[in-house]
Length: 143
Image 1: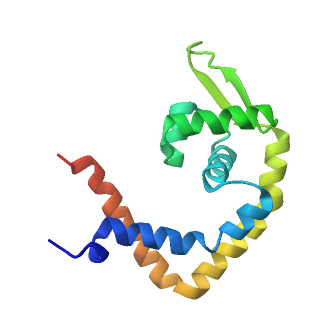
Image 2: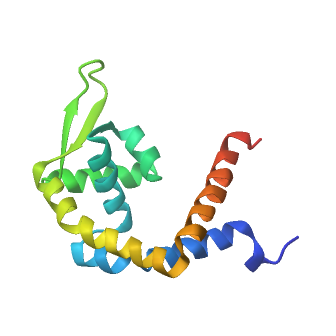
C-alpha cells in the first residue's frame, strides 16, 4: 500500500487547495463561497438548468445545492420556473442582478487564473488538464 501522502486522492485534494488559493481572495471580496461561485458561473454559462443538472455540473450534492439556491432566490440572484414539458421540474436561471455580479468579478477571477497559469506554465496546465480528464473518465469504469 502506498504511503498516505503519495495517494492520488490526497494529492488531488492538495492540488485543489493549492489552486484555489489563487481564487479565494476574489471570492471573499465578492462575498461568495467556492460552491456559490460555481453555481453562478455554471448558470451564467448555461442560462437555464434543472437542479439535478446544475448539481452535476457544479459537483455539489443536492442538499448543499438546495441551500444555495434557496439563499440565492431570497437574495434575487436566481429565478425559478416550471418546465413547460414537465411541471414537476424546476428550471433555474440567473437574474439580471446575478449576471451583473458575475460580469463584475469575472475579470478578477480571470486574472487569478492567469496568475495560476503564470506560476505553473501553460504547457503544464494543458498536460495536467488532459491527465485529469483521463482520471475523470475512469468514473464510468468503476465496478
